Amino acid sequence: MCFSHTLSLSVLCLLVTIWTVRSVPPQPPVRCDKTGCTVSNAYGAWPDRKSCNAANITYPTTEEELRKAVAYASEYNLKVKTVTKFSHTIPKLACPSGSDAMLISTSKYNSVIEIEPDRLTVTADSGVSLRELIDKVEAAGFSIGTSPYWEGVSIGGLISTGSHGSSWSGRGGSVHDHVVGISLVVPANSSEGYAKVIRVEEGRDDKLLNAVKVSLGVLGVVSKVKLSIEKAFNRSITYNFTSDVALEDIFMEHGKKFEFGDITWYPSRKTAVYRYDFRSPVNASGNGVNDFIGFQSNPILISKGVRALEKSLEASKSESGKCKTADTTLAYKKVTGNGLKNSGLIFTGYPVIGNQGKIQTSGSCLYSSSMRIDVSCAWDPRYNGLFFYETTAIFPLSRFRDFIIDVKKLRDMKPERLCGIDIYNGILIRFIKGSRAYLGQTEDSVVIDFNYYRADDALTPRLNQDVMEEMEQMAFFKYEAKPHWGKNRKVGFFGVKQKYGPNFDKFLEVKNKLDPKKMFSSEWSDEILFGREGSKYDGCALEGNCVCSEDRHCSPSKGYFCRQGLVYTQARVCRFSSSQVSMA
Image (cartoon, rainbow, N blue to C red; front, side):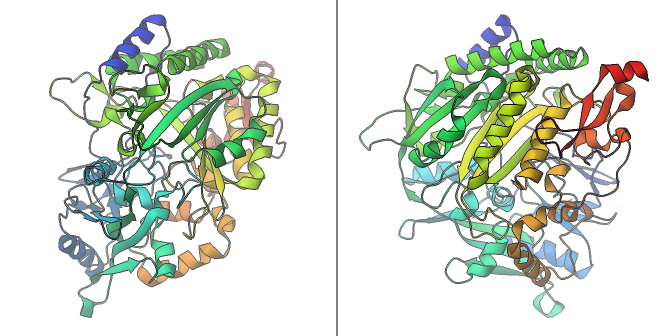
């Protein structure tokens, strides 16, 4: 994320945009020594900020090695979790239980990509990266219909957590809805060698496929994924930076009109950016690339400087400083096309036309070079750069209009209080189709994502913390939005199983059948899957680990008290009050 805060930083960011640099690769998520292994996510901190440990890890390279790893754990009654090369899942789904727990990494299980042109399918080992898969499919003259916007994921990991792009067309924007087959390694009895591979195909095992294609890693280890593909196609993208007037009445038409369209809403700036994104005519030429600004390599010194400035604005409670930053960021995105590049080098104007493989996803900060050691992904925890929360809510289509109206009411009370999300990427609005996956969206839906500052210390409140909390509770409680399984703070999962109705029970039925000993479950994955709130403690609301009901759940010593929401009055949020601090 190349967030500019001064003119000089804007110039430096522009140079980074023009000349794509190769950065320090992310650190591996698992690190082991003689005492055991520690597993983290790409951001360097789990939601509870506690470490996650396992006794050992194995790196299978073939399906048989993967089966033997599961068999070993099954024979000796060990708890198991699967980890990937990238580990971008925010909740603690990859953390096992028990001191003798075992990790199975798919980072080296990535050699097979098989394309069947006649059947329009591709089958890949679960450890294959999204970028490797896309490039292989495109080289053969085909395209994958959808993908998440971030390419730093493995194919097995991204379907397991419900990753998605944006589309109501065809099979839709969720990658798991393009899955037509999965191979899964599950525990078995001794006569079957303690583990076996089951192969699930669309049209033959639909009920089982509906469970395993969004599995959260609690059914077994995904071995291979078979996706539908189509003949290669190009896309054309134009961003329209305009007013957010009537956004609540326009979003649905926009989602229906543009196959890959989305909307980025900057509420404090009263700006909406409509992405006009559709298949371009066959004869339209272009070599466009989507190199999204947020996923470009950043000089480490700039990442540190941006973080230091944001911390200082938080400490001084400077809303005006955050709003100036939001203005600069939005202006920079406008002039650079938000990272679009017409010829692969620089943005020169709209439309930007390119093939699907270069447009659908991005992540240039992932790739290493011995030539540069001073640039990285902006959130790389080794360099004290960006550190943030991400809230992602999936709304039934019928309820999203009212959510927009409520956020506008909250914004209109004092727009400056929402500048904190607009210095990141505002509120990203995407569209995904109804799914048959048991843990997928049950109807055509609208997804929002917004990022916001996370303090270095768990007990340090944020500037305008109450506004973000009210939006979060408004989404998940008032409008009963479902959480994205791979994102969110703990509060987003409270009561989640009730939102899936009978499908949740169907998923549990499969879970109990495939993993009766609960080898692949842990206290943390159960916490997310079942939406358990747990006990409250001093400061628990500051990190979204509870909804406050007493002042002590916030930070009364620093002036943050538990209060009702301003628009959604049933919300309970941590709000700053200087007068109450004075009285104390």
